[in-house]
Image (tube, rainbow, N blue to C red):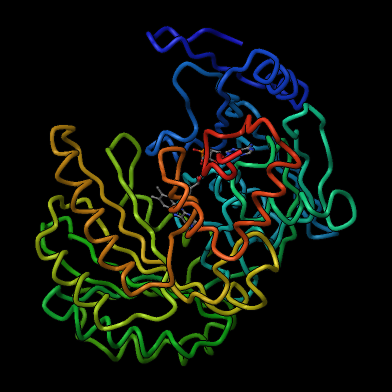
Length: 420
Ligand SMILES: Cc1cc2nc3c(=O)[nH]c(=O)nc-3n(C[C@H](O)[C@H](O)[C@H](O)COP(=O)(O)OP(=O)(O)OC[C@H]3O[C@@H](n4cnc5c(N)ncnc54)[C@H](O)[C@@H]3O)c2cc1C
């Protein structure tokens, strides 16, 4: 454990194994110290992974991945990022749906539910967890799976960082070869028309296809929109399925082509490099209503930064099936997540960019199903906001939080159960 050389008096514990993390949990509980967990640190932009005047359980040194190719499973430590995970499992011709940016950590993403490019066929990342090794607030290291601690297993699949410090994730994998994927870019002047086309196109898709729609500014400084596809199946069949996207043209550029999963996973990385300032809002939408289209087009015309993107991520197929209490991820029926990802360089511009993001997030949410993706929430969010975002599972999750962590040790997160 080392002392941070900055005036926050925080401690960072660079864990080498689960025993170090157990020591951290016991130390924090016994000394009434605030505790935060740092997985891939992607959420640093919201500050959830670090806490002032507290103890950071830092997993950046725990990056082991073990693939069992015969059984199509992989076990990974909490410091692993998707770029590392995808590379290891693709070496065996296997993959698992992950996120859309390769720099994201497996920990925060998996615990929030996790929407990715292969989700139409394989569901959320959290649907593919076989087991967790997790330290609960009493310092016990437990296995959580369908048979052992099943309630905890349910809560960890979408309940965020509330239920314990996870030291190992075991995933199911799938054979995945070349994919037909990429982006077709159109001028911003066609934004309304393109988004209405996308709404129709994406509303009746085979599970093999997962899609997205983006607003962005090109490197030449031109506002534009783009339709993203990722087809996991035969390339010939994929061409037939995505033909309407190619025919919607004329596009400024059509980058849709066969590519391996690792290329799909890194294709948007340049849009969100590390080191920039970011602020995110991500309301869920059951459908894309005209009012939401109008809000996005109108606001993007006055976007304060060229680095900001709006990305409508499709959450259909296997991700949307089943009852909302199937796991702790309560937004099953919602077909889209509208991610407003603002990025800017100059810290003096923070106020303007955050205000713009909040305004647009609220306007989109008015046409949504209530609440937003819990991975975009943190300890500063109100209980009402947390309740709306966990949806129908909120009460059960609060009960389980009180059972597994009655002192609310794990509160520097999407904090459930602060009323107790
Ligand atoms: C540019 C961008 C793109 C994104 N794209 C997607 C996407 O495509 N799909 C998607 O689903 N999400 C996406 N997200 C959201 C993403 O899932 C979260 O940012 C996620 O929290 C990142 O995980 P991490 O491990 O890197 O985060 P960290 O910053 O390390 O941790 C975030 C939080 O996760 C919890 N946590 C971390 N490690 C542990 C642990 N070992 N045990 C218990 N709790 C832990 C803690 O509450 C912590 O505060 C995106 C976010 C951004 C900024």
